Length: 541
Ligand code: NAD
Image 1 (tube, rainbow, N blue to C red):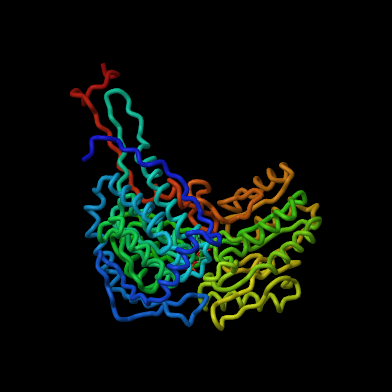
Image 2 (cartoon, protein in one colour):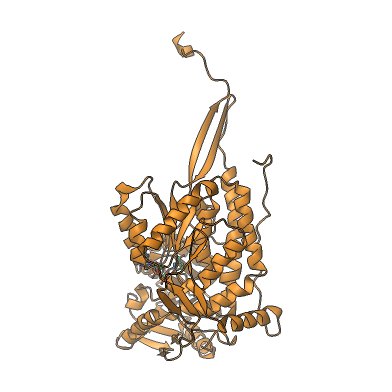
């Protein structure tokens, strides 16, 4: 036990490297991609620190070049999920009683290893596995993950130092215990940093974790597990299993020690999991914490006073970076009639100038979408639009999966504000634009608010302050992350804590104390320094 109150290093955002031609980072990333591509990995599950191979292998391929084989992972079944729970629970007592500064040191070490020797391996794995270009990999797999580790250490100490008042004669205290049981992390394909954080945040607070990644992210998940190990995370604290979702869920959600779900993914899956947990509620030792960040139908709303070039740039960047496969990507836009022609003209020019292809060629802005299922779904939406009378495709609309899963950045213009692609999450490079009468601003804000079940992110572009104030008020519940004169994506840890409400999730704000506080169960102490010795209160006299 340490006789000191320690202060961790002050968290700072990791600077984003530029990857300009001739830069060291560009050369290092290219060399690492080449090196990784020349090998095939044999990815085991990692349970209690042991590599587990089942022989039931599934091959992995870059989405932009599906003929290339990156190696295979070993698929597990219900017995492996059970083993992972057992390993987590076996590690729990020691990890839960590990001094906080030692837990903090492990994750601070993760941050520094990732900022240095692991950086390009994590970026290269994300480029190959999820088809992210250099910039998208850098802001996710390197910078955001580093920021999660650093800032969460700071938030953890903020939580621990939040203590109650103590009047004279008493000492009141709160300790922030980890949950009694294990946490189940289910992660999406699209952000390597989110996957790491869904495991690391509960683990930092003293919890043990069973992690089920998306099949399409396992290649980069392996590097995350390597990083945890290199930083000294004890065996069994985070266990990774590859099992299909319902199989894993069936074991986990029936377990008495299931203590929390840390989920990011689609709304439908989250709602299904919530029901499963509800169906088993009588079986648990404690009420499980349920944290889920889910889908979005994120908007850009422009006012008649907006600057057209700013709106156009917001649309193009917000909708098409990482092929629109961001929960925060703008996918419905409301343009006022006075500036719509100018905005649309620039959007068309910008989209026409975007190169699409492999992320290994750094001049490509647009790369492939994650897999065939996703490709077919997005292509299905594009085909649907082509058949409708109240919408037209004004840019893109082409797709080709012969080499990789490539879909052109596609802009749909509709005369129907409730057109299907204005309402449903597509999760691809498709944005739908509706032009409204410039004099019907407030009505259009109401329409926007009532159009989707989601409330994740949104942006207002305007020069007039009163227009910004009106939008801020009328759209109070339409987005958990609200942007003013900026695209609705690109949240930075420590700056814009991320999460949405309504159908978009529990809004527990990843990368803030609000998330970490869900992974503790406080115990309050009242210590009477000089306890009374007579039962009689003064009023009895
Ligand atoms: P998904 O819902 O298809 O899968 C997410 C995870 O759930 C995967 O690991 C998957 O295997 C697992 N899963 C699926 N069915 C399951 C079941 N029945 N039981 C247990 N696990 C199950 O999502 P995805 O395609 O990987 O990611 C895209 C989605 O994630 C989009 O909807 C996007 O908006 C959302 N997302 C949200 C945020 C946010 O912060 N709000 C961030 C990233 C992604």
